[in-house]
Image (cartoon, rainbow, N blue to C red; front, side, top):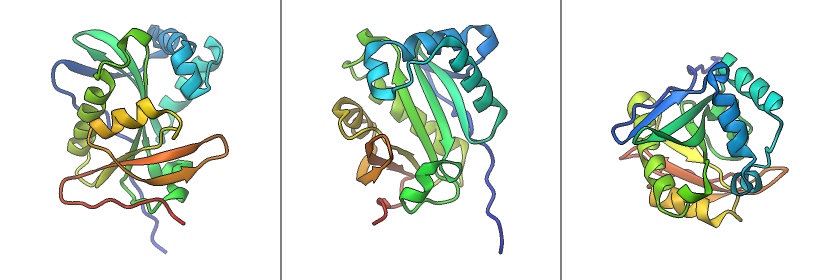
Length: 192
């Protein structure tokens, strides 16, 4: 039996007005992510309004592995969003749809409530998906799984070129499986 291996998720190249960086817990990013995760609009969607110590440990653990890459994205030099870019094969999502070995996934939290509802999230998601497909030529699609009840998030993914390919059930939520295929590749939906 041959084992399929893929590298860690890449940091996508983004063009202006966007920049993206790996989080650096020791340089204040843990405090930034912690603050954003405790904002009511993020806490409701993510359910991770943890302590600063727990977020510091979480970010440190993600950075030491090859499953998920925690990042901060900036728009015109101002930090606006926390993202987790992940290898689907190393995630529980892999068992819920017909995944391919190089599929990449993305989670996003726009940090400030004033930055929501203006299209900023969908513009960032489009740039991130384009960047991931450019960074990993083997990746045929970028996926996401926002809660079906989070209509604003589902709409933002749709505006960014992701298409709804079904629903997937997690213990804590039912999610819309959103897929952004590489041009020329089709969609693959949820299993069962």
